[in-house]
Every structure is written in C-alpha cells, then in structure tokens.
Image (cartoon, rainbow, N blue to C red; front, side, top):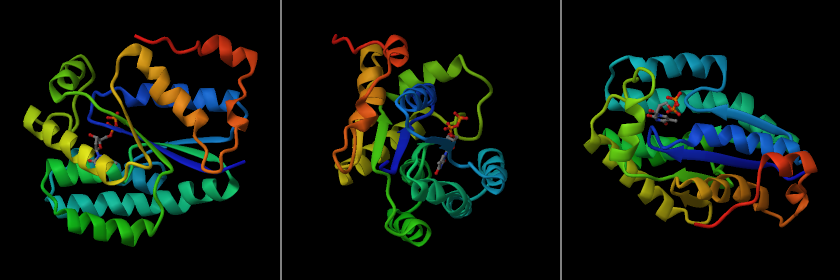
Length: 224
Ligand code: TYD
C-alpha cells in the first residue's frame, strides 16, 4: 500500500476537524491503515508542549521553537514510522499552520520558519494538503458558538485575516500538494472525501474501491 501524508489546514472555526473523522472512516472502510493525529501534539511530549503553546504567554520566537520541537518529536515517533509501514497519516494541522499563525499572525520572519522547517523535517512535505478556506468573519461566528477559546482562538479578526492570507501564500508556493475547499455542504464531500481517495502518488486506484457499507454511509456528491 502507498504511504500517504495528508494534512488538514484552516483558520479556527473552518470546520476541518469534523472532516478528518469522516475521511479516516472512509479510508478505513476502503481497507487503508490510517493514523489520525494532530499538531501541535500527537505524542505525550508534544501534547505537553501544546498545552504551553496554547495557554502560556510567550514571545514569537519561543512559540516557533516550541511548535517545531513538538513537530520533531511527532515526526520521529509517529509520522515517519507510520509512513515507513505504508500507512496513511491524516494530520490535523502541520507546518503550514506555523507559517500561517506564527508567520502571518504573529509576524515571525518567513526565513526563520523556512530554516526551522528544513532543520526539523528535511525534505519531508505532505503529499496532500486540504485547506479549508473561509472568511475570518464567518469563522468567528462559528467560534462564538463553540467552547472556551485558547490563546489563538481569542484573537481578533485582523489576526485571522493575516493567518488566512499566509495560508494562501503557502498554498500558492506549493500548488502541487494543495487543494482548497470552501465549506458549502455539497463540497465537503468533494474536497475532503473524494480527493484523498482518488489521490495517489503512483496512480494506484485501490483506495477507490468502496464496500457497500461505505457507499451507504457516504452518499455520492451532489453539485450545487
Ligand atoms: P486546533 O486544530 O484548532 O485545535 P482545536 O480544534 O482542538 O482547538 O489547533 C490549535 C491551535 O494551534 C490553533 O489555534 C492553531 C495553533 N497552531 C499554531 O499556532 N501553530 C502551529 O504550528 C500549529 C500546528 C497550530
């Protein structure tokens, strides 16, 4: 089976987390071994770093270093072993989020982030990134109905607009792996379920087979 590394990105409130569960279930139904994980986090050490990053005040460089330290541990203990086994890794946020939040949101220099990216992950990049793009004002309305905000979720609209445009720059600089989706219901399936199933670096179609039980749970896409 072809190992695949798929990341899910978007500003807080974009709705990506819901989709990861659906994609994981769909891929498992199709017989794929799936590792579903998140950043910052995914290992005991990285989860502890996540708590610090999300809740302790700190300067931007410290924030970048902690996020990349968590990523290093996550890569070594979870992501790389899973890819070596041939599994599909679904990761709720990855390095694009660092460029978006620490870079766009908090003003960390792009060059610093690029240097850390190379140091921590070498050549490794996701095979596919699903970026859930929506205006910061819409995401803010969704967040208002959700649970208590962490340090990032409590930021103002201007912060999230900067995050969004940094995501757009990252997507433009690596169009081969990026797919962006807006969040109209019919498109959810198109952007998050169909693309990962059809995506294959080597063109193998084995993941496209849908057992009947899966077909019932995941109806065909409907256009607008
Ligand atoms: P999130 O996926 O929103 O978790 P949850 O849905 O449980 O709130 O991620 C938590 C926050 O971490 C989010 O606000 C973005 C932030 N973050 C960064 O600032 N830099 C990073 O590199 C990553 C991966 C996340």
